[in-house]
Amino acid sequence: MRKVLYPGSFDPLTKGHMNIIEQCKKLFDEIIISVGFNPNKKDFFFSKDERMQIINEVYKNDKQVKVISYTGASADAAMENNCIAIVRGIRSLTDFDVETQMATINKEISKNRINTICLFADIEYQFVSSTMVKEVFGLNKDILKYVDEVVYKKMLAKRSAKLSNKKNT
Ligand code: ADP
Image (cartoon, rainbow, N blue to C red):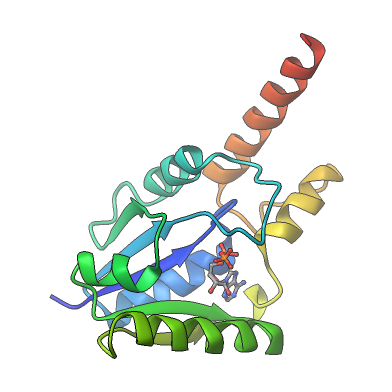
């Protein structure tokens, strides 16, 4: 069985991520989505548990997709889960620079066992990012072009919960 690890923050899962996952499904038997914490990103909209729960709900009928939580190096997560590679998505030259460094580190950590495969989202999703989705949502504009309905509903619920928490403090 050919398994691949797709690590990321997924705050929230977007149609850009989903497009990469669809491409992976044609190349691998199983895709393990590893939901983590990116120290370069501070203001998380959803907790890690919530982000995992959302992905699990979106892919509840898809036997090829599994979700895990991981805090360490992606190379270690890949080896522990018997994955043959890590997959990452590329949108820009900035992504490319970051991914080149990460791929090199992960290769070193795994003593050349884990390589990184970079995929490109289809053109309509190439500019979609979790950050952009949160910004557009904050402006009360339609985000259903960029996220699954499950994600949109969870974002609405989270916003209401945050607002009522604020009112009560
Ligand atoms: P991280 O915080 O690790 O960058 P993200 O959730 O932002 O996590 O992204 C996870 C992976 O998905 C990264 O490789 C990122 O480049 C890729 N990705 C995100 N959105 C897109 C998109 N629209 N097209 C292609 N790749 C994407």
